[in-house]
Length: 215
Image (cartoon, rainbow, N blue to C red; front, side, top):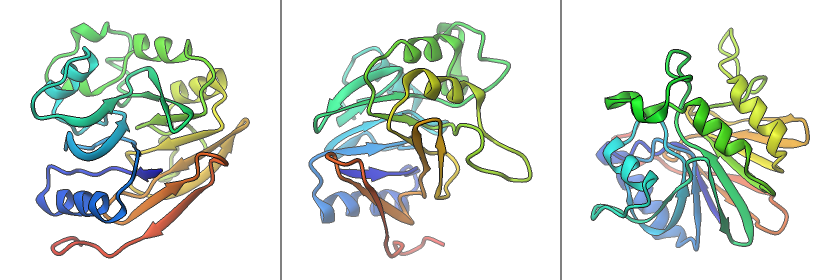
């Protein structure tokens, strides 16, 4: 199973790198942790929405629609799916304290990028989760002189107790253990890709050369 961090594939060089990974590795299935920005892909991909997406497409996927510009993508928005025999769930969006208590249908424009209390409550009701995908990090994983983690993600990990949580957004590889959950913040897809053994949940990172034009 292929696992990818943020892609930011609206940028041509990064889209090229993303598609090269698919073509070269020929994965049967892919997990991705947000800021995808490309929704027609060569292999089945389960992802959570980040804070940089086409939110008209994301809203359509939330509603169970399949817009013409999409193919092989499956949005995990406080939902779960069976992928290679594993139960994979995800929380889409990032946290904004001024928007968290609003109903989702009151979020407009780019503010649709946030998750709300409704999204967290729906995710917390899921059961038997093996892998949890989130764009936001839990606390005690990263530090910038302050902890950028989100307590709502902490609460979800405590409720769901997945074996593995994969995190996007921060563009750096970090690992921690929260309760009984191994938590991994993923490097971006233009720097590293990961492979996951569905039998053992062993995650292995692989550095690769950057596409032309990337720093």
